Image (cartoon, rainbow, N blue to C red; front, side):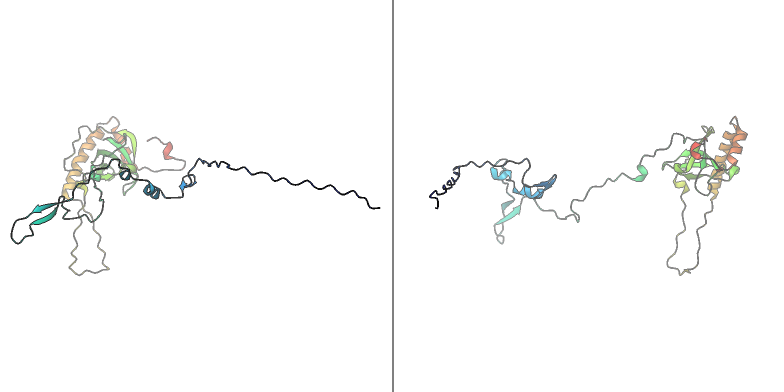
Length: 267
């Protein structure tokens, strides 16, 4: 026989009651929405400035507008009687470049301050490292206005005449000659050593293959000045306690041999 017992019914599912009137909390972030990453914004800075409300719209710092023109009365039968005139006239000439900077007019290279090494004093014996007389030992006469050094051999000792050289191309030695009594002529300066090349006449037909180089020849004035200066330098050399040794030192050439390092040498 079949049983009359029936299965118990499943309990009904009770739905959760939704809360009415749930408060929405606005999420506050540390960074603005326009910030994509550190230092990178979604909107360009100049556009953000445009979005801001100007002070003139709020009424703060509002200045009254000043008239630009004025009406003047003009006499005469043929005139209109009145004319509108600008209070501030426009410029007659306008610059070709906008915001042209003002350049200093007196900051020339020849006016710059020249700095020389402390060891480069008149009378010091120097070793030339460049030029056609490199390797020779010369006597420093003066530091010129351009910062170049005026040196001489003397010419009768080692064949080096008066010439200019930059301080980067000399080595100062400890040997020094007393040149306090030496008075150089006033005309011996940077302009004294300028060479004037002859002007070429472009109107005359010339041979394009002919090569005529300018050959420098010292003037008589240059030769006389060389003898005058060298005579004073030779007096100072002979007045040195070791004058003969200084003469031999000036005649000898400087050169490096094996296992000789300039940064370890004492001159």
